[in-house]
Image 1: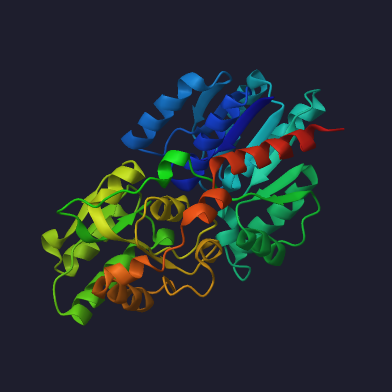
Image 2: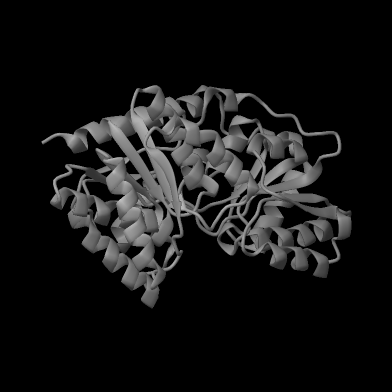
Length: 372
């Protein structure tokens, strides 16, 4: 099959998901291409794109894509459509809100002009993070509902994502599947923290949705509870980085809190002993799976698909607030050895969240979508 993955920002979990799918699908003998935004990402993401580009027989196309709908979409849409036509895909798989719009609308245009392309969509959270009570939410959910008519298959990465879609948008009028994110076999090898590792570690995009501000505020409360200094490392890039640096400075953390640019997760795992995922919203975060596979003790918020990994009643989970995070972090800080015993792992984790299982299911969905 000729498969093209279309998404906006080459950062975070969506980018990781697409890279993994490309590698697995190339290994299966398919031809792959990628279309994504040219204005987001940094040196780390540029290196990752440079690594995968030679494997993409259909090409890597980067073109400006705005986060929000705007006038710039007209020029971007025309450039993207021309690129996709040249790739001649059998499968057009959109990831995230903007990628989903592009894949389904352009796939439909190509069908009308004689190319029988299958149009698939994976939200990865995206518009589902909006509230039904906001004007923006109503607009986005209305668009999602209308796009179902030109969607050949919806692929969710968690039960939570599927339930959220049903409650906010409605029962889908197209075929639906749930396919968990998967990890490579080598990622299930443990990573040992460096001797000078900090007490806590955050890895992720620097934006409020991911909760770095909650993490920093919780650190101060942990210090007050423990009555001793704590140290932390935050790894990642993003639009709100300067704000979090200023927040840490205002709380007088000084050198006890350090900020480092994005790097491979397994390199970052060495930099802190207790991993914290303070997200306000998620679908099925790769960083949680990667940390658990590497044997990292973890504190995470009870949002999105995270309870599907831990179990809904796990003591390792907390509410997405500074106070709840601080209370849970303080307990883990007090007894790290016992905290490790709360972590899910073993063969069940490998079987449920393997890249082979993920890629195999998605390839089956592609073939089903191409069937007359």
